[in-house]
Image 1: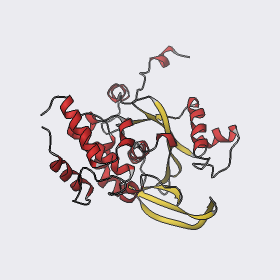
Image 2: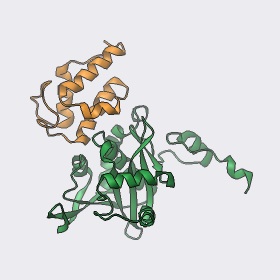
Image 3: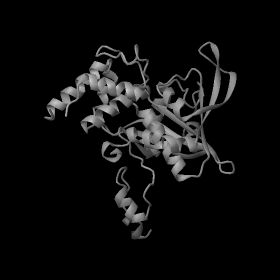
Image 4: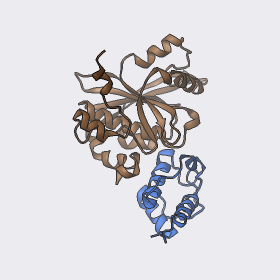
Length: 214
Length: 82
């Protein structure tokens, strides 16, 4: 292996200036560091955390209640994924969740986005901030027309107001999933690029570090 | 410059387009029916006023508009702005 390969600058979230100058990234490249969380690319060292998160969520984030084998669990983190980032809480440098973009359809300019958060980290805005950074990343890096998000009625979260602002309901499968003794609808939302462009400044203002949002 | 509670509540009303009758005892969840995303929005407003970030651990403890103003007031006093 050439020694040159060891000379590449280390990418540190938030350290874009040196990365930009080294690789010639243009201004406007999407930030991966938010006010409270950073998006860090998924690597094997996070598998254990992600398993514990799924377990804490009753395996309902991606497995609809089934308990996958360890191999199936790892495969699921990569299958059909375009990008996956672990949400890292910045003040403690600890993982709190996962955001991903998957099942892209390049021909039609669509993909799905998902956000999962450890329940112990809820109520501090990490999921919403991660979603905003991810949507910004997707619309900045790829020429998507719209991003879909899939959820179930029972998946009550603190970001439905954000969803109302950014997403529109595009489809609903009535009584689609059985859980907790009853049937629930499955809902597909879509965030259109035009809508994102309208909201981008205001949403990023609260999601970026103070010094970046001024 | 520290802003009064009246000005602070006016800012909240404008930002959230919510009930103008808010008092220090107005509860964020029970009275204003705010979700975590909107509570974070209020925290961001305070952070912008202060020019510094509030601790993450504070966020789940915020119950009323008065709690939020109290933290704003306390930090302004600590950092010596009058």
